[in-house]
Image (cartoon, rainbow, N blue to C red; front, side, top):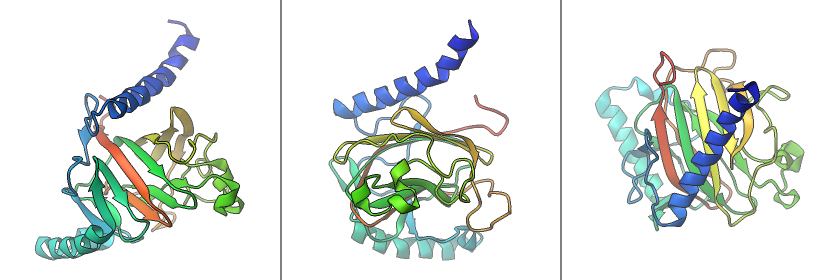
Length: 246
């Protein structure tokens, strides 16, 4: 196989994966994972999730199990006010705590579809660390001055000018259409594909909560939201063994 052909393989794989998930959604097979992936959202209810805000989960992870469970249950009161399941989609009203997985993940590949509205702002926390950015990329959204003109998918909380801070290309679809993320995290490095385009390539995710320190070895996936309705579907994860991608 030629070098050019080998270089094309990852691109083709991403395109086929995105197309497969999109096709499954369009013909009614919502929330059915591709081979090797596990659903984080069952399409029916909020089982498997609780709520956090912009808070480092390390503050809570070492609590006694009974205290942690009480805190989780209390957070779910807020989650039930602002999150709902509708036609196989997770829907948030733009307010409240961030939907947070009960389970912690180390190295992984995450697939997720989202659809949002004008002037909304959102993101995905990886191992409890912010974040893969989602926002209104239009001038009318009011955030061009801080990078929204470059589009979604960047590691927004990285330092200004650092690799991954801004997406390499604008890949957002117009409002009213579903967007598809593929996010791969191994060690501290993150790759992000948005709608089949490689918008972040092997960039280090900065430890927002403990600047200068290594990232935690594991943590929750969090779906952040504020400023407007956002919908999520087809939320799938594949854990990657620490001894390599298998």
